[in-house]
Length: 64
Image 1: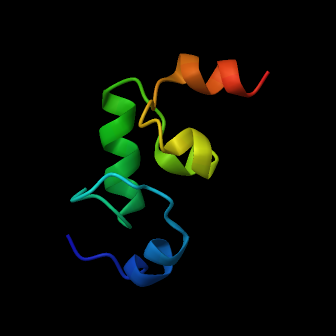
Image 2: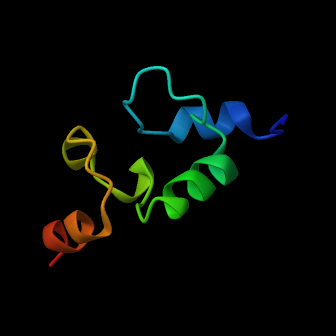
């Protein structure tokens, strides 16, 4: 799938997972993480994102 906003998305994407095939493809990223009961990297700060813990429980615990 070609994304017309890929470069703009990549400029803002804070995902640090090496080789992620969905990097910059927000609709694919959201679909993937939602199907796993997770949130994408953009919901987390840089420090939180580096844990690679995308769980909703983790998000709630660090945002109380």
